[in-house]
Length: 406
Ligand code: ASP
Ligand code: MG
Image (cartoon, rainbow, N blue to C red; front, side, top):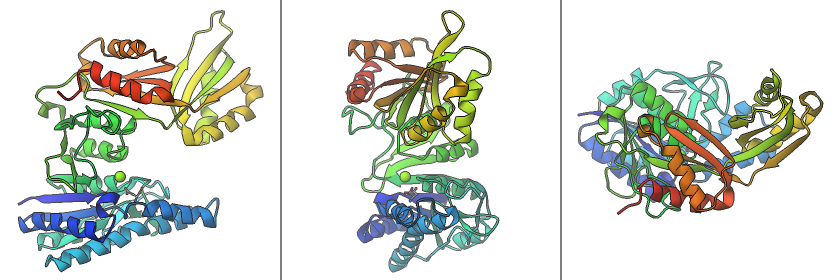
């Protein structure tokens, strides 16, 4: 007997038949004598619709009421799944975020979980009752509903698994696991049996959409045994584990890409102390996240170009902030370009092997793809290239690192 958390994403609960399919999967685990908590997303498309309603009513809506509205999709699926389980003869009830409770801070629409008081729920799970929990939601200290940011149900599931000290956290989705690259683009991509937390974290934050980045962070911190698998096909999925659990480590485990980047270049920025602070400070104040940054050394010690990337959605805000400060910052010209994609090769194996970046540069050079910006971390090399080369670059890199399925 084990204690498990099962999480089902929006496509897995997209309609009544699929909710019934989920109920059958849950029944198998419950019948095996496991204590089960199920976390559900809203039906596919529902959250987008709810977000749309909010922006139709109010351009800058009250974040507390926004959370009341957008959290409702998960409330619906939690009740429906509890009913579907009851129809199968399984004792089940739903637990809303405020009922458990899942405490969060007060950053409405992007709240972070502080603590989960699972005792009452665990007591009922121990008595054989399946707990159905709406993902994405919690409650703030002022007793109002909060949501955890888009894709937040993954984080709900992992947080719950950590709080309940679950033996496993199974994330059911519409793909059968984590792939070496997006299989819609790279047909020779392979499903990974295992991936390390560190790699999964980089994959998620560099654009792979299979798990919300924060959920991976949390799983890594609390050592939650995480598995990604399909709710439509049988199969073992992909296990996210500690590095020690991977016997033969590949040099590169996966290639991620993000079209969500935009590039800004400030030309002729003066080369003196404090300039970076005066540029990135106001951007941070405007809640613009900056990702890659390159600054050259000026030839004559006076002026240089500074290039960096921001999220596409933030591009307009970022240019406004910088243009408003053109006088102070003393740059000559701002050039914005949103026709870019960031491609990242990821693998813990690169910690101990040289030449990974070089193979990337070679593979791109052979295809005549120009690299605009480069950034690296211990287990990742990212490049920014023109968006039209996305497919070509991903396929070339996948082959270059020997990841193609035989
Ligand atoms: N329903 C929410 C969203 O679409 C949360 C989730 O599904 O993870 O973002
Ligand atoms: Mg999701």
